[in-house]
Length: 559
Image 1 (cartoon, rainbow, N blue to C red):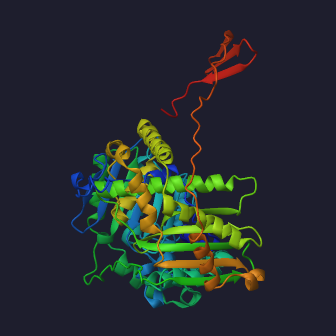
Image 2 (cartoon, rainbow, N blue to C red):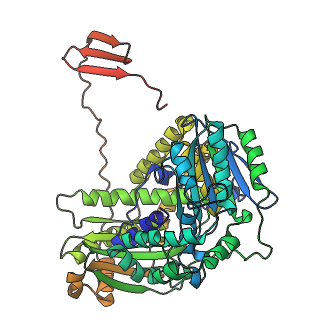
Image 3 (cartoon, one colour):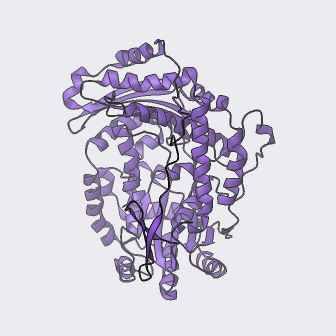
């Protein structure tokens, strides 16, 4: 339930899936400011929160965000966000942040034992598919979608959130029952990915606290901790000044605000608060190498991970800077895609780009999944394109296409703004609360994009590779099947592969852009010879003079 989100990151590390692509979700994170010569004209103040959301903070520090939205109609999505996760556990509590999340479903003040799940399922809320939660290193988040056309269910939904915030019962009998559930989840998570993660995380995370606080915890703690230990964790960290309720859906905002104030104002912070330390992964200035094998690893993966301090995403200037990096990723990804579409590509999968990491870091990740026996060939092909970008940069035509793609995506998003799903807004406000990432709303974003994208220069985008592809704070990680252990390169050999590519006389990338029109000549037109209408289905069938039939149906699903 909780651990699934974390496992996505672990799997990406273990199997070399740091392959950048530009998705709609990613485009939302490409918020940006101006080029260096223009930066002084960009405000360094934090971007204001989306004016469509009502927000406030109660005297006890509890924060709320409320927004009316009718996609889907008669539904609401509620998230209870806690700025607490496995990173805050003591040695004796490893795994208890995740365990606590489970226990929130096993009895609260108003819903004893399994009554909560039972009640919600009777109300049409599916456990796992709708009702869910997750625990990560730095946060624990509970999510609850509900119908809003039944006032009783909505009222009880708020009560559930209130119970989760501070009124889990944590009965000893229920704790002991849940040990087996957690251990089964831990068992299901085992495999090549988990075993390799245990070896790679300490190096990747520079032996920071993150490396020893994977949310699933340790078997020793999970099987033997005393109930008082998890109760202490709950008392210390589930407190209003570390919590927020996010409510988006087909609701009356003013009424919801009154309800939240009435329900959550009496939450108490501990008399002696433990400081909520913000942990980071330090940059050591060292280069590291690690090769690991596992009998269940299906293929050989090699990664070069160059770590950097991540930039904030708070101001208009931050917004523009991240857009430059997003354009860089998009263009570079297109080059790797072109390489992979060759008749005989040099690898099974390969790519590079800027990725998020943990603990305040991001990184340039170049990764290859090699064909059997062709690790050197595959890796050099991946590194060669990174080196080419570093030496020669990109072309103006590549940048123009990337800009147009981004502008088109933003234009579509603006047109569809009244069709945005409530879940999308919730996740945006969640990142605003947890990480202070800007969430100015689509209108402001469109204003920034329209202002900044045309002015981003090729020089700025090309400068990203010089900033990110360095020979410091670099990890080389190889993961392979155990049977190939003897043939894997050592650190000296791996470095020689990088050096040999760096010494090659590479040529600049040629962007073979065609100036020919899509059609050499306009075809002669036909005509519609028949038109049939089906009022019941709302269909119009056109028969053309060449025999082709065209079915038309108007909908309002998209604008």
